[in-house]
Image 1 (cartoon, helix red, strand yellow):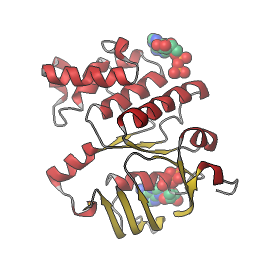
Image 2 (cartoon, rainbow, N blue to C red; image 1 turned 135 degrees about the vertical axis):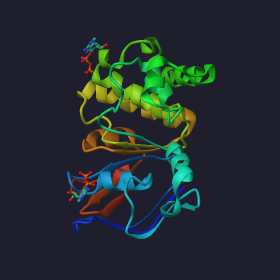
Image 3 (cartoon, rainbow, N blue to C red; image 1 turned 90 degrees about the vertical axis):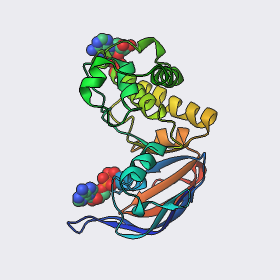
Image 4 (cartoon, rainbow, N blue to C red; image 1 turned 120 degrees about the vertical axis):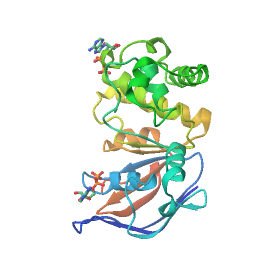
Length: 237
Ligand code: ADP
Ligand code: ADP
């Protein structure tokens, strides 16, 4: 469970990214974060895996106050709470499977990735994750040969291979056309249904959030202005 208690985040320049957030997210939820550009959606998501440090309040994940995590414990935590970005962050000139496997060995230098020094177990886990997002047939294709939607699915597989219990996604479909965006959202939905992972996604296309999420959190000026079911969402958020 993710629990925010009076959480605020003020950036060094004085901008208030988040203001007094109080909420809980249970295991297995599918949450869509909506709000206008600059509302604080990205700050909210990034705060949950400590890409941002909070400046006030308490944020706990499975009972652990994450502000206290350091070094190895923080790295382990970030594998448990996986993150997917709008820009896929893949290494372009190597194959899909190597991109996925490289996440299993976080400190592996790039030259080892290029030489393909992986264990059989890493390969199995990578192929399994690719299968989850219907990308098994592209495992041995170079990532720069793939379309945007396919790259985002590989990026999702790379995070999935780490077996996270929470998936955070910061505008994962913003760069994709509507049809491809739906395909990627379908993958998130299937993973949430089949594996029971908690999914939190920032989506500036409200319609897409309403189609997929079960719970909507609306943010404006760093504050939660809506938190509830899809059916209660109004224009103002
Ligand atoms: P959203 O994801 O909803 O577009 P963000 O969380 O990116 O919004 O931004 C919320 C507010 O915080 C905005 O006013 C933005 O300009 C500001 N902000 C975001 N990142 C930083 C930063 N690193 N330093 C200062 N201000 C920031
Ligand atoms: P998307 O809307 O996801 O970007 P595209 O319409 O660009 O999809 O791609 C459709 C198909 O074309 C995909 O199956 C993909 O394999 C192929 N494709 C796209 N870009 C390239 C590329 N640069 N090299 C090879 N195949 C590509």
